[in-house]
Figure 1 (cartoon, one colour):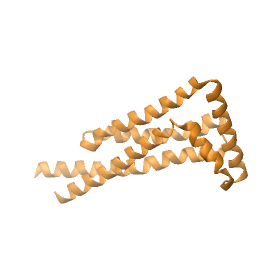
Figure 2 (cartoon, helix red, strand yellow):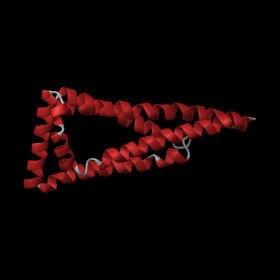
Figure 3 (cartoon, rainbow, N blue to C red):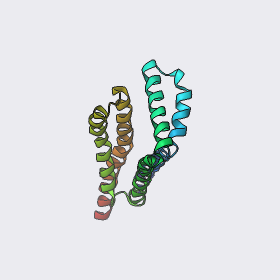
Figure 4 (cartoon, rainbow, N blue to C red):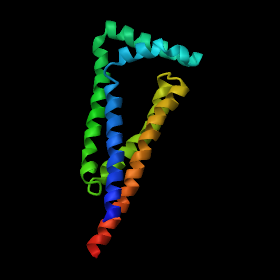
Length: 165
């Protein structure tokens, strides 16, 4: 019983951390122009190629927002999607064994970041180093979800053994 509680606690900690980071990631899509303005002001700390890229993106977003503010609605939906996906993880937070499919869905989504970033990033002329940064979100999301998945399988095994006894 002690191992079971320990596994549940570990799973919950990882899921809560994942949910918090997903929500924070989503919320950053709302004030995009302001964030890029800050990043642009701090860009002197970056390598020259990154400085140029940040400045280019800031000016593009700023110009688009001033002339076509409705275009930012797309990033509002991006933020909303992050928040909705975070809500889906309430299921495994309550009962990881019964909702293991949400963990599987999350891991698949993390893996899908790679083809999106590498293919669409190339089509959209995103610098390669920036695409690698995007891919890191897939890696950093996959790791805690995989740990939850493996621990959920162990929890299921323990539950099965306890029911047999």
